[in-house]
Amino acid sequence: MKILNISIAILGLCFFACKQDQDATSTTPKIATNFVKIHTIDTIQESDIIKVLGIVMSEAEARPSFKTGGIIKKTYVKEGDIVSKGQLLATLEMQEINAQVQQAEEGLQKTLRDKNRVGNLYKDSVATLEQFQNITTAYEVAKRTSEIAQFNKQHSEVRAPISGKIIKQIMYNGEITGPGNPIYAILGVGKSDWVIQAGLTDRDWARVDKNDKVNIRLDAYPGQNFSGVISEKSSVGGSASGTFDVAIKFLSQPANLAAGLITNLSITSEKKENFMVIPIEALTKSNGQSAYVFTAINGKAKQIKITIAKLLGDKVAVSSGLDGITNVITTGAMYLEEGDSIEY
Image (tube, rainbow, N blue to C red):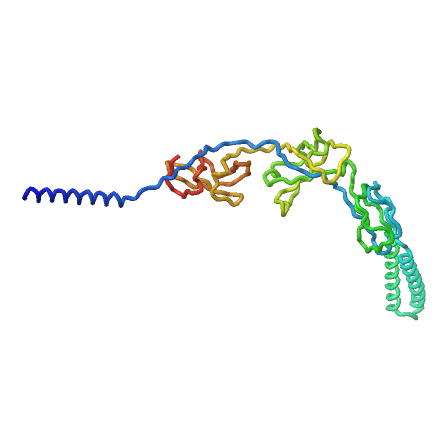
């Protein structure tokens, strides 16, 4: 009986000791490990060729109009006609305008007679100095009124301000027009008038300079290459597109061009930089210009802020933030926090 009691006591002690070990084990915190993939950072050099689409436009455009309003007597050209600078395009009915000129001229003659008469009276001390000054002022006003009427008469016709092609006739014979209302739309179509407009990203805009060479291909002329140079760089970005315009002048061009033709441009730039390149899936947060990525250091995740230079399809060119870093985490990066344990 005594031996049985001793056995039961020993079993109880063993059970109590095992229970303590189990409780101690259950209270030990477990460290979670995140399984991720890493990617070695690549380095590339910018291409010396910038490829972009452009559109053919004319630098010379005009919308001529009458200086004064009135009834259009005659228009002398129509849509599609080629005109030269200074060519007569349209005239007004002149009855009203001629009457205004005659009225102004007669008023001038009257004030001249009055001025001479008061001047003689002033010499004889019959008229006062004030009267003589008043009539002199009236004469000067009438003279300017006559000059205005003559000027308006001279500009009661429309002449072409540039050489080009009539692309639209806006008003016709017999219509009433007001001062400044366009009668025609003229587009310059000479060889020196054509220019290509292209929108570049801010980075590409900074890489190009005036007189950089451009290879030009047009869908309208398949298989043919033309040459040009950058003639202008815009100092203001497009508010909607976010791009910066450059103008390209043709050095060689096809015989026929039209506004609106699409071009494929290859701009040769002398400015090149080296960039670190990472997969786009490595980005965890981004606001367009900057982003965050994780790198693996001694089995821990470390978050790094980077500056984005440009997007390259499924990759990102980084301009700063990765100095001394050799890898970034790709798969699993979205679920990481600073200092998380990782395996790869």
